[in-house]
Image (tube, rainbow, N blue to C red; front, top):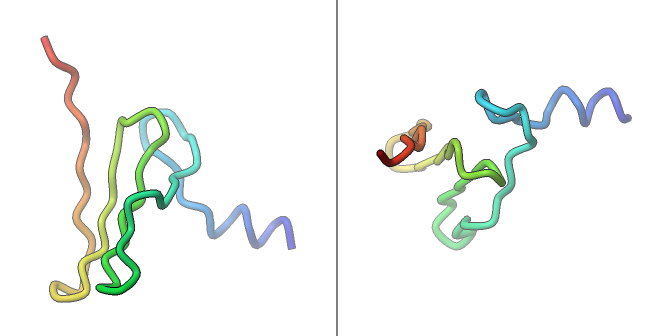
Length: 60
């Protein structure tokens, strides 16, 4: 079962941390997964039937 969990967990492409789902709205099925270090965010939007990925750009 641990192998299945490892395969299904999504990782941040920058730091390889496991994405968390803190900002999701389950009533609208809008799922937001984000990196705990705020490098990356992935949203599933049911109306678009797809994902939108956000990469955080460091401020200068």
